[in-house]
Amino acid sequence: MDQWVEESTRYRGEEEPSLLDLVFTKKSESPPIIQYLSPMGKSDHVTLEVQMQEEGASWDGCFGGVGEIS
Image (cartoon, rainbow, N blue to C red; front, side):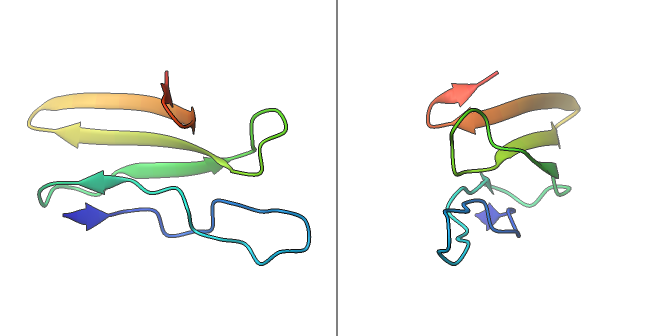
């Protein structure tokens, strides 16, 4: 299993930034393209936009918080 997020994803006031939001894949494949975008609303987590390719099909989604994939 591979984890792809490499930058801090949570920034809260004066606290040290944390890497809390992760993207995992089960098998070796080409790395996803991950963009780190501004937080949504009052969130202290960045928005991750993920583009990945799997077995000839592509998937493009935006994750804005727990359980939210559009």
